[in-house]
Image (cartoon, rainbow, N blue to C red; front, side):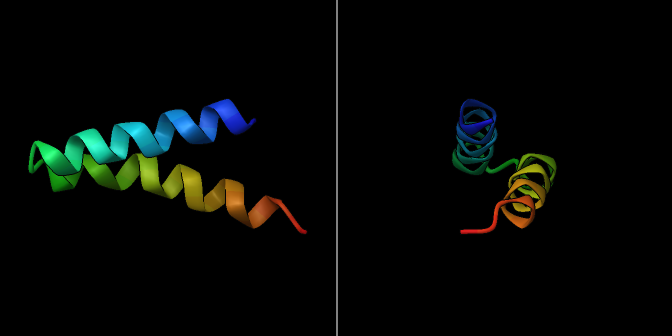
Length: 40
């Protein structure tokens, strides 16, 4: 599960660097959804 989160954050950062902000949304939504499922 952590690898998937890392992958999505990496993709979002790549899209941000390429100024493809519209394509950054989906990976960040996935990260946010995963964060919501983890309770410390």
